[in-house]
Length: 394
Ligand SMILES: *Cc1c(COP(=O)(O)O)cnc(C)c1O
Image 1 (tube, protein in one colour):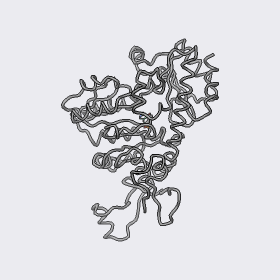
Image 2 (cartoon, rainbow, N blue to C red):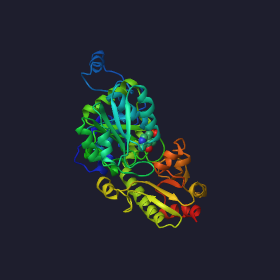
Image 3 (tube, rainbow, N blue to C red):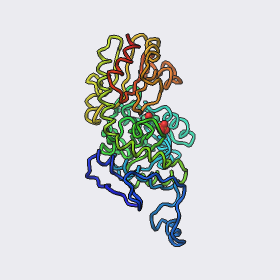
Image 4 (cartoon, rainbow, N blue to C red):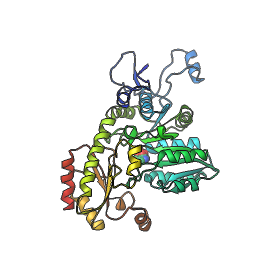
């Protein structure tokens, strides 16, 4: 196996296409898909040396696999990290981080606007194992500071948040975490390394739901953790033992996803910005949430931290739930689904789907009002998307 073009000095678009590529003795031009659970040894002596870790090499695909390694190396280069470990899903990535770096009695400080399963993982599963979490408003630096305790080992945040696109200041929060001798972990699923590189802003680890924009076409589940050699080694040892490993086929699909990531994220963002501007001027819309709009309360921070606004636009339709449902039911092109991270645009009504189990008072207070709609803007022609929304708004 040879790995080419792993030098850090290439630009991101080049690394996305050539970084971490491995080729076998056949010197194939595209990344080969190695569908094998195990690998053979040349001799008893080589097997012994590999099992002792004296020499490197592939032994079993729960540990390492050439296709998965290529994906890990490419993503690490794109995030500006030393190493990455891939996982079966985004949730498996978060779980692997927590199970490998924390123990009973430790404390997490986390942003409160999180992917639903992440909230459940922290408040449910981790609590059961003696790890407590304090949730804070990600925009409130004083709240992060106040929530830190002597046993706080890890800060966790998602930015921009879903669905209200609140932006967390990664550099400032990493400084607070480090002052308290805690690590900062950033869920970078929404921006991807094409728009935001948290490790360069002081984060210790980045995690991904590769299911979203890294794949970008809604085909496979996957996850990843990126950071320093020392931290990722600990996460790797957990994955290797506990087994939430990424399948080689999914790694192979994700490798081609990465090749077009920056092109896609640029276009997702351009479409989203155009749609957000149009919505802001529409008489049936009360309010639009999009970091790329000057009216966004943290527009300046988003400009500093992100290359563009990303794909997710949320807005409040006049007429509460009735107005929102009329819009959701009126679309013919945009997909009615809670999923996102796809070339196909999607529309959802958070109050009755993703946030339906949250108590109505808490939901309203958090801004998830009855008229709120979230659109994850895809790569269709933006005029077609406007026309589709206009049908339900007029
Ligand atoms: C989807 C998602 C996850 C979970 O990832 P899975 O691949 O579904 O396990 C975590 N964080 C964010 C921001 C997500 O959108």
